[in-house]
Length: 495
Image (cartoon, rainbow, N blue to C red):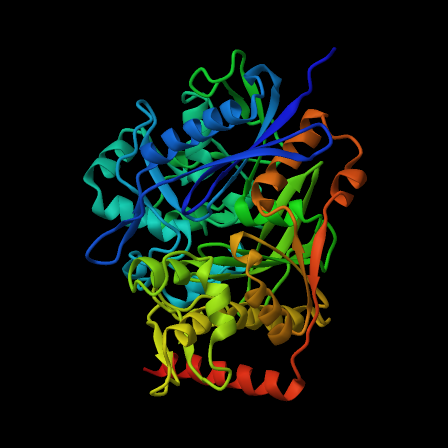
């Protein structure tokens, strides 16, 4: 009897590394997770130890194989999805990072962005689809070169590699043989020309990034290389897909056509609409990037990014001690006083899309003497729904058509209060898949298609089951609540 083949999906996210197996029908067969430390300095800098991240990635795969009983020889393809914009710099000869990775949330590169002229800012936005911001990788790379002497020394010797997490993982998994990234990740660096589909020479000079430090850019469904993953597999296994995590989730939802929308709820959130095969423009504070390069074509997206959604719940738990686990938030939100008018604006490291105010800081507005634990927890959940609604409204204005269905993914989508609130405030149908990890699934499905394991792609994506939420809130209450949110945001912007 022939043994089954499996596809391995690796999702290296902000909080940890996940490994999932999918069988020949695309069904999930197991999952293993390992968290890594969030390194936060007294200045508020947010970093990751990439050597720890890589070790955890390898160990998560080994744990998964041991837990499922799947033989390493049965894994025939690997897909990788990754936290985006997080920036890594390492020695090309040793593979060792020169400093901790700068996490996408970290705004330490604000000073880099302050030195650009209006002409430069316009060129950056027109070329990359995204406004100048410390959120993206280019300014983070410049900060490393300005502040890490070893990085400058290695750059001068032609030994410095700089890239996003996918490029570092690939380099390390292939023992330095492959230094590549894909279109989706490259388009989030602020160094990539989304029209010519290449690193932009003028942008590299603006930021002072030597072009030879950057990886080769490939279609997302390329065969990026082979790995035994430190001897985990008896024979090298092909890495057949790499995508940024949000792009992988869009692909996993089956949002392959123009106008389809998804929101990923994680540490932060990414809301994406498939914009088709031509570069889109936004007048409403959204950014354009590449969805993927797949089967010889590229697709673009319009996207809004939020720095703090799930991370707000982590803050409630770890810093305030209001909850002991995220699971408590649903019951607390349902028990909160319905007349309380508290709003939490989670601008801990500035406001992202559609406001783009990195200088703003968080606030709780509208509290009364009776505001308590349950009301603050509910306000934290509501903040996610309000922020995503801001993005959806911007997408509708840019695209000229109403959004009627929102596909969602990520751990917080199991929260029934949050999903109903999202449907009510945005006035859309919310589709929650029974499979949570859409990023790992999307990269695994693309890898399986590339490898030939999945040939009936229509059937593959039709196997998804969803729970649907429909709007129930009255127009009057919706208007009252959303207007209160806008006032709270304005108060934060003006403070």
